Figure 1 (tube, rainbow, N blue to C red):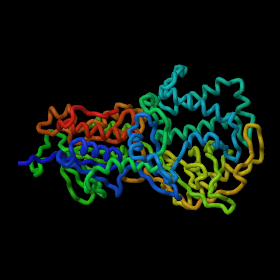
Figure 2: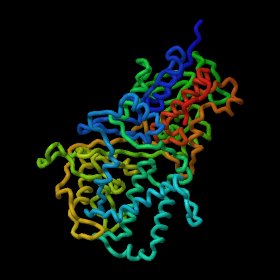
Figure 3: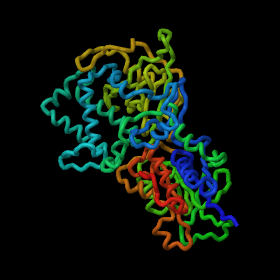
Figure 4: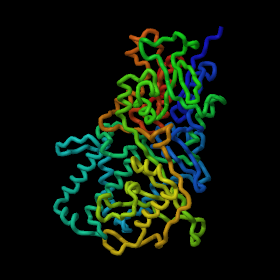
Length: 545
C-alpha cells in the first residue's frame, strides 16, 4: 500500500509563496514527496510584484529595486536568467542615481530654483542623521534626551543644527532670500523633502511612528541598488517555471483557516485526518497537513482584528502572535505615473526635457502657500522622468496622501498635478543669490494625456504595501510572527495536535530584511526548509539570512 503524501497548501503566489513552492518541489524530488499546491486569491502571480507597460516603457507598479547586489538572491537569479539585459526601455534604466545628480533641480514653491549652496548642506545633514539612526555612524550626544521615533530624532537633530549656528539664526528667520522664503524656511522645507522620501522608503506614513531603536536592525546588501530591465516579474516567473501545470490555482481566495489549536480539537469526524481546513470565498473546502500563509501583514491585521468567529483563523491566533501582528507597522506606498503629451516643437523623439525635479513646499499652514495646490501633493518629494528623455513621469506617495491618490479619478489627478507643477515652473518675480529664477522649461506648460497609479491600500488582497517597526513594536515581533502553529510550548499540552499545521512567510516575517522582496524570498526558503527538515529530507533549515 502506497503511503499518502503529505498535503501542503501555500496561500499566496507572491515572492514568498512561489519561493517556498520552488524549494519544496525541487529539493524533495518533485511530485513524489508532497501533494503540493498554491492557492492565490487574485488572477495573477507575483503579489506585490507587478510589472506593467505604460507609455511604451516597462514600469513597476510594486517592488522596484534590488536593494544591493552583493549577496542578493534576487540579483543572482536576475543574472542567471539574463533579466538584467533588455533592448526595451524600463523604469530607472541606466545609472539613474548618477545621472540625476547632474540634472536634479530643486525648486521652491513659487518657481524659484534653490541654490545648491542651500540644498547640499541639508542633504548631507539628513544623510548623516540616517546613518546615525542605522548605526552606520557614531550616535553622538542627544543632550540627554530620549527619543522613541525617527521623527523625534530628526526634529531634535535639525534644531541642534540650527542652534549650532545661533549667531545667524535671527538673520535666517527674518531675511527673505527669495520671494517669501527665508533661509530657515527653505532649510526646513528642504529637510522635509528628504523626510518624505524616507516615508516612501520605509512605508511609515508618519516618521513619528517609525521606531528609532529598531532602525539599526534593518539590513541592506552592499553594492548598487538597481532595477531589473526585463521586469521584476521575471524573477517570480522563473521560480514558478519548474512547477507543474495546475499547481498554482488562481482566483482561490481563502476566507477561513481552521486548525487544531486547542485541547478540545481532535480529528474525529475528519474523513481525511488532516488537521487544517481551508474555506474559500466560493464555498469550497480544501484540507491539508500543512499550510504556509504568505498573505500580507495588512491582511493579517484585518484577519485578527475582526470579532471572534469572523476572523481569518479558527481558533483565533494565540494572544502573543495576534499582538505582534497588531503592533507592527504596515504602510501604504503608491506610485503615480503620468504620460506627457508630445509637443509639436519636440524633435528626435525627445519627449521630455524635464529634470529630476525636487519640490520644496511651504508648510501646509503657511500663509504663503499656493492655495490651489492640493494637500495630497504637498508631501511628495519629487517628480521625474523614469529615465532620461522618457515621456513618462513618476512620483511617489505614502500614508494618507497615498490613500487619497487611490480615491481620485484620472481627470482630478491630472488637474491637481498640473496645478502643482505650474506653481514650480512659473516665472518668479524676484531674483536672489540663493534662489535663481532662470527657467529651463521655456515657460511651456506640461500637458498630461494618461495616468497610471497603484492602489495597494484598498486592494483587499494586500491592504497596504510593506511592513516597518512601529513605535511600541520591535524586531521580536517579526520573529513571533514567523513562528509556526501550534507553538512548541502548546504542543506539550495539546494531545494529538500535529506539529507545523500553519506556517508563516512573507517580508513581514523577516527580522532584518523586512519590507523587501529578498526578505520575502528568504522567508519562503525558511518555511520550505522547515518542512523538509520535518520530513527528514534535509538535515538543517538552510539558506536563511
